[in-house]
Structure formats: C-alpha cells, structure tokens
Image (cartoon, rainbow, N blue to C red; front, side):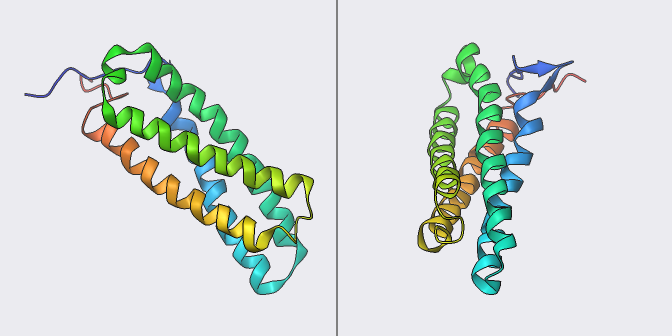
Length: 152
C-alpha cells in the first residue's frame, strides 16, 4: 500500500512550482558546457558571450527555483524527515554555489580568458552535480510522491 502523497506548499492550483521552473536553469547550465566547448573549438567570442548569459540565467534561475524547493523542505514535516530530500538540497546548494562562482568569474573577468581552465572545469562539475541532484529529485517524486497528487 502506497503512503499518502506529499503535496507541495509552493504550488499554483495544486501544481508544484519547483519542478515547473527548474528546467530552465538546468538547460542553461547544461548549455553552458556546450558554449564553453564551442569557444574552445572555434575561438569565436560569440560563444564566450553566450556562456556568460547561460551562466547568469542558470545561476539566478537556479536560486529562484531553489526557493520553491526550500519552502517544501522546511514547511512539510514529512519532507524534512526524508534523507533523500536533505541530500538533494545539499547537492543543489553546492551546485548553485559552483554555478554562481562560474558566472561571477565570467562577469568580472575576461570572458574569453576564464573559459580555460576554470570556466569549463566549473561548468563540467556543475553539470555533474545537476545529474546527481536530478537523480535524487526524481527519487523524491517517483518513490516518495513529493509534490504528486495521486488522488486525481
């Protein structure tokens, strides 16, 4: 018998906000790896400019999305008791810290010079953290039914 679903507190008309908005910063941060590689292969400054914007959208958008996840983590006792929820949150904070550092380095420094080695290294490490956090987020949804209304 499946446990009662855990409905999100950060939701609009029952639709949880965190899984709705997290896709945009994730896409930007994964695209950042491609932009860095595009710059390294072509040397075209376009890719360094694109990387700056992708890093900013990814970092800022990720922090916005994390607020919605944090609401559920802190406001719902059943979520707070889940080790996987805390692991997901910890990985997300580490990932967003790396993404913010990556964006800051590009924003205040030479966009092209920062790509190698720090920009690409941070982009790849961020992508790895995204994969781990996404796996844990999937476990929260599919195994623990966090944010899933199974009644309808």
